[in-house]
Length: 357
Image 1 (cartoon, one colour):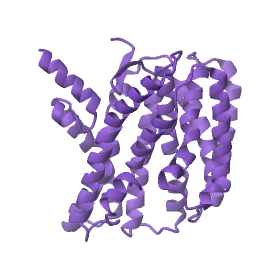
Image 2 (tube, helix red, strand yellow):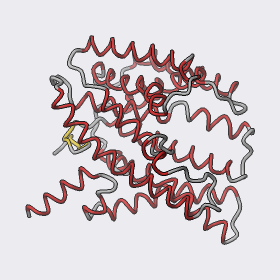
Image 3 (tube, one colour):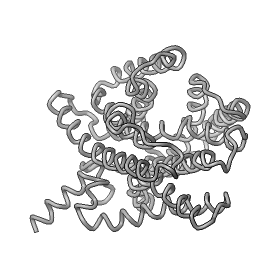
Image 4 (tube, helix red, strand yellow):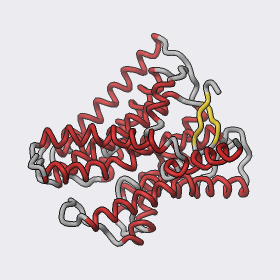
């Protein structure tokens, strides 16, 4: 159906800017993890500015962008609907399937590979039950945290109530980065306190967002966002010249990066179909869950055949970490059993359709 897409098994209006942001953020996740692995492997010094600045800056905003998109789509798909406990439980069950299957599947695969190739990996495997249920590993912690956000956050029909809840989330975010982060809180509590504000920001945007074409009068907003972005980059350039753990600074820089990025992608094509970018966005999940596995395997192979050059490693692993998951997904999309491990809801629909025929 024209102008529609399927997300988590539900027919839903397509927002091109959301597709753009998810693709953009996913590429940054791949780049960030790969760059960090180069440091862990000894190719880059941890204290070098050309490592510290890009990695620490990226990590202030790339995953928050995912939470914003998820919150936006969550509220958009339930706009003007009355929330009930029955509907909420049904939605949580659907999210458990949609997020739980890829989370457990690829977390376990990663842990098994780390155990089997323990002498060749940068980071050793952690206890499996603790990793799966208490302290998830990168990059799968996003799926883990997102599920719990769906558990605790209802969708809203009352806009004023949503705004009040968002203000409360901002307060708790500030309280967290200033004070609560210093306590030994459970990992999931830390992740919720750190990311709830971004999820609710996405929900709030869904209520105030209006599609419109750009006008010359938007130049003022353009320059305001350029200044905000410049401030964020300037602060990060000054403070991230060396390794630095500072949650307040991370929140400030992340905010300065996020709002201009949102404004930019909303502005470039808010109303167009964007079928090509939507097609690319279908590869988000396979690239997200497979890129670290692919990169680690390739790194091991390249080292064994005597290739140790940094540029060759980085280039080959970056390209392969994107293209190989896409090829795997294209193959998997033809068979519901293979597709199930990436998109279980879509796979089960494919199975039902096949049985009906």
